[in-house]
Image 1: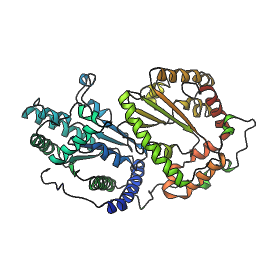
Image 2: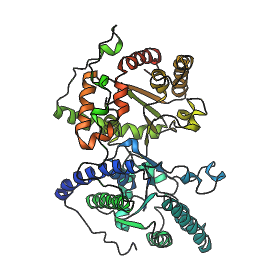
Image 3: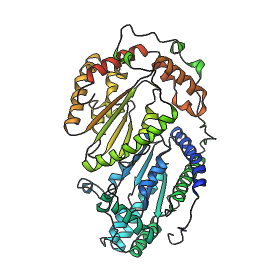
Image 4: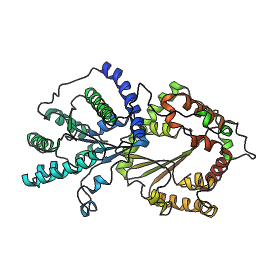
Length: 478
């Protein structure tokens, strides 16, 4: 399979620059269609050391809403992993319906490394391959779209890249990662790869080899093949496909929305800290793009520094509906290595979560040392939506301020960096954005009747937000 792959394929830079925005827009729209259809998507990237798995994942997730995907890096099994069946850590990382998970290496690792390290004989290989095929069949039979990429480069190109990595102070740590086989024979590695791919490329889960020698062709080919696989999955399930930049989703019907939501919101009866926010601040587009590039590059450096120093970072986004949390998170993460962060969208708690203390589900999602967790809404729901909507008793939300401060202190005292944002807009700007979302087809999925209903309770939410900020903005986590 791999020896037939043409590694000399290239793509001129001009063609790359012209085609990539079109592919990115199509993938962005497909993500919304996949979400509407409730289809889980698993994308696996395997291949040679230095073949560009990190760059590949970055290429694939760049157009996506970061709240709709997760990246899982498969390291050598931990002591805890060894107390479970081999596939446990993959089963427990599978996506919910409508979501994406990208695996940087995966469940084939035991086959590949076992053969390279001579810990797996031929009989053991056959047994491991059967386990993999069963796992993948379970997924696809249940409706998961499973896409498997193998990144292939030549011996000469791998040698060049490994030398470049050794000379790069930000990248050389990768050479000391467990599972790095740079000293093994390329021929032997190729034999092992061919063997594993032949045993696990099936009709329901075929391998797609990618010629990863040339950067522009590699990225273009990956995006094109992912889009084709997603479109095929939508067609097989008889689900509507995006047309142009529009996803066929039901549009909001303004006539069915509460009239009081469109009535101007009266000003607060007292001046609050939110009234001191200067909403007239503006930034010229050219200046914005110039500063954005510089800041994103600095964030990229800091992400790697946090990894080396084993510093975990927790970021919290709260704010008004349509204040721009999603867009902000997307620009924040655009140049980060997606293997180092996770965006965690917080919805209403499910039955299991309701059976525990309300902070339980957030403790479970705090990042390990060296990683970043970005919460799109958070534990502050207890003193915002749960307070306003009567989902928590007054005694519960009143004691939550102290509980939240203590929860956050536990994080910062353990060495985590905690950053909290409240995104503020005026009620007039919110109304303008809501109405724009109704008009623009590819934005309609962002507006619901619940958003309009929440707007009609602006005064109650404003009071809750002000008290929340006043009582939980501390020196260690302002």
